Image (cartoon, rainbow, N blue to C red; front, side, top):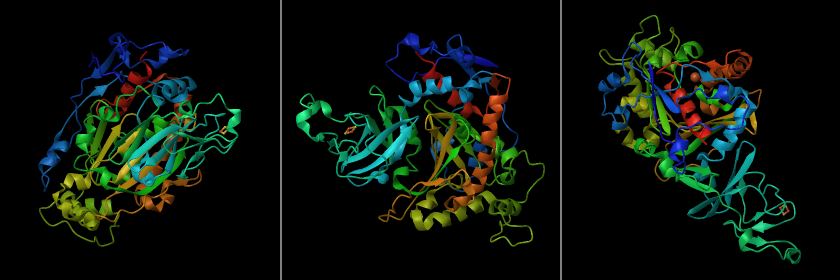
Length: 491
Ligand code: FES
Ligand SMILES: [Fe+2]
C-alpha cells in the first residue's frame, strides 16, 4: 500500500507552489525521470513487514551495558514508487541536472580540519569538473575559493600543499591567504583593476565534527541547519576527537550512486558477502530515515536469518575471527554467554589503549554493530567504533565513473594526535584488498566493487525504464532518490 505526503524542500527561499511541483528541467526524456511524484507530492509507503529473527531493539534489550538513547530511536519511512528511473544512472541529461541543481548547491564534505592545520595549508576539492581551494587563512579561520585566477582564469593551485600567498602560475597575479589582492605584476597596465574588487570570491564553509564542508551556493542555509539533529546523534561518538588513520580512494567504473547505494543496505550480504552471514544479522538491520540524514544499523555477533543452519556461539566467533575448524579459537564463549557479548568485550580491550577506560561505558551494540549514517547526498560517517567514513562522488565530469573513498577515523590517546594519513589512491589494477591498512574490510569491498561496473552495464542494457527496491531494507536507497527528487526536480 502506498500513500502520499508533502515533505521539506531543500531551500527555504522556494515558494510554496514550487515546493510540490516538479519543474520542467529542459531535458527531453524528463517524463521518464519523474517517478518519485504522484499528484505533485512525494510517495510514502507503508512498511509493516519485518524479517524473521531477533529485531534490533530486542538485541539492545539483551545488551550487557547501558545502551545510548540514540540507538533506541526508530524512524521508519519508506519513500517512492514501485519502480525507480534507470535514467538517473545512465544518462548525461540527468548528470547535467545533478550538476546544476545538486552539486552547485548542496553542502559537501571537502576535507578534515586537521588536514589543513597550519596557516597557509590548503586542500583542493574537486566535484563535477569544478575545483575549489579550501584554505587555512588564519589560525582560527578556514576559507574556500573557486580555484580560478581573476586575471584569465587559470586554476590557482594544482596540488594540495602549504603556501605563504596564492600566486597564479600563468602571469603571477597574487593574493594573500585571506583573499585580498597582493600583487599584479606590471600593475601600471591595469589601471582599470581596483584592489577591493579583485578580492578572491569566497564560497561558503562550514565545519562539523572536524570535517570541513563547502557549498558553492551563496544562498545556502547554514551547515548547522542542514545537518540538523545528526549532530545530536554523534554527541557520544564525537568524531572531532579522532584522527585520520587511513584514507583509500579508487575510481569505480559506475555512476556514483551505484557505488554509494552498495553501502546503503545489508540486503546484498546473502549473495555478495555470504561469508559474513554467520555473524551479521543482515535482514534484521534497522533502517531509519530522518530529513537530510538516514541510517542502517546492522547487528553484529548475531546470525543472518537467511542462514539455513544453526551455529553455536563458538562457531559464530570462529566465523567472525576467520579461524579454521581444525584450529583452536583464541577464546571460547563461556556457557550461558553470547558471542556478541564476548566479542564486544574483546573489542573494548582492543580500543582501551587508544580510547582509555571510556570503552567501559560503551554498549555491546556500539562495539559490534555497523551503524551506518548517511548525510545527503554522499557523506557516510559511521557511528561508534567502526571508524569508517565513506564518500562517493562523480569522477570528474563523468557520469559513468565515480570516486569511492574509505576513511578510518580512529581514537588516539589524549594529547598524542598523530598526523592525518595521506590519500592512498589505488590504480585500476589494484583492489581494495591491496590497501593493507583497511585490514579485513578490503576483501569485503572487493566483493562490493565486483558488482558495480556490472550494474552500470546492466542498467545501460536493460529495456526496462525502471528498477525495483524493497520496502524496508532498501529504504535508505529510496530516501536518497526522494532527496534527489526534492533537489533536482524543484523549480
Ligand atoms: S591567468 Fe592568472 S595571472 Fe594570468
Ligand atoms: Fe557490501
